[in-house]
Amino acid sequence: MSELGNRLKQEREEKNISLDDLQAITKIQKRYLIGIEEGNYSMIPGNFYVRAFIKQYAEAVNLNPEIIFEEYKNEVPSTYNDDLPEQLSRVKTHKELPKTASKLLELLPKLLTVAVIIVIAIVFWIWKQNAHVADPNNNDPVTDEVNDVEYETAEKPKPEENKNEEPVVEEQQDSQVEAEPETKPEEQVQKLTVKEVNGGATTYELTGTDKFELEVIAKGRTWVGIKNGKNKSFFGAEIPQGESKVNDFTAESEIKVRVGNVPGTDLKINGELLKYEDTKKTPQNITIIYNK
Image (cartoon, rainbow, N blue to C red; front, top):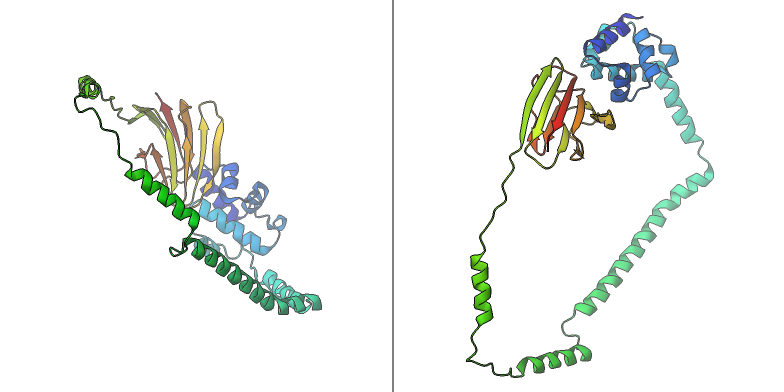
């Protein structure tokens, strides 16, 4: 095992991150991660990917990649020899374009111009049609006839109502409405209390609410896994910085949340921010028991 590989592995184990967890965080195959820890770079396809994988590994365990590259520059391969053939191959491919492709590129501006003209003509035709329909000076005999009928109907006298009749029904309805007492439903008060703390594991109890909605907010790069009390997995992946994940667990009585980066992750229960017992320890296992 190389010194660099030993340093990365030691940092990973101190943070209690397994190779499977690291594979989910970095999206790098587990065999390549093992190759980095053992210093076996020959199994990785190219020096460029070796440096890229080492950089992602270091960031996942909260190490500065630039410092790692500088400290172990004798072990990390250079990417210059890989980049030069790639640049030469791109130049060669550009020069060997077939004549048919060149002619197509020459005709492309003309085709785009024709397409723009056709679109403008269609838009103008639609505008003219709408303007004709909306013109107030357009005398439509059918519309005028309908308006005359409505005007005549509006002017017909209504039959005289019996002034002696008293609105008994309305008074009875008003009295019934006033007699009904107002009943207001009792408001539930949500409570999220800490029941047990054991190292990197904390158990909370959620009461006083008829719903259980969990929102995971990534303030930084983080990995989150969510299971229920029967170990059924609902979610397990990396959440990019600035994005959030919302799940409804009203049907569950217990869920377990594993947070890979506690300082960079906020958890909200029905909009209420969950307060970590230890904001620096990472990763952590959060258990929420839901009592309806």
